[in-house]
Length: 260
View 1 (cartoon, rainbow, N blue to C red):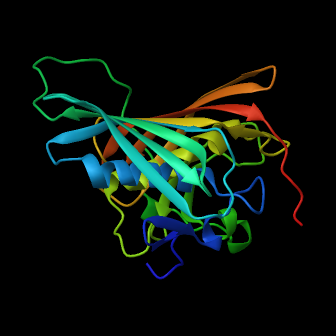
View 2 (view 1 turned 90 degrees about the vertical axis):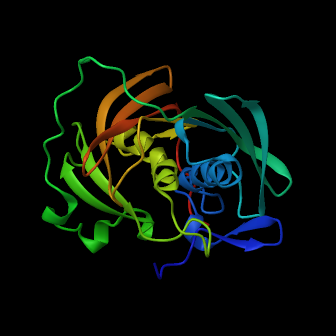
């Protein structure tokens, strides 16, 4: 990956680069880098190979600026089968978000069959054309392959996403970090309408029964609902081998700040 990373390390802090800017305010961070960094630190400091990060919930209650970031973590539960880790995203000395991750001990599936949705029968990323460069999302923050659904229409959307840059300079992307960083996409995928995106998500939760085996992560919108300016949204999440989990969020009605 030759593109600029989202963060560089300076001492005990992570310093955002211009690539990490979000869509709502030109001087704030994108939600995907907040969720990604919280998930990455939880995995880096607390995960062991025999445990699966089955749930990551990220609360985003303040738009952080481009100040240096510190992430602190705390072990809530360190059991034989269940581990729970909390993390806090501190930007410029102010708390801007937090995460809770539940890690479950890997074992064997029980016998028997359980109903599940039909197979996701869609073209693979390599079989889909790249988007028009003029429509590249967020100036190339990630790479996409549209399966179905236009962002300017009222319709269900399905899309592949792949990372094009490191989250933290010098640290390879892990499968879990790929999902944690992309899960924020559930909000624009499900909440955008024919007038554009006018909901800003205040959280994101990703549930995983396994991690992606490929670099491409697929999103399929399965729910959107909104009342009184409060929305909820959900996507099924896939890799090229099949389903891996879900991503959901809550969101508030919001308008973008004008560029200065």
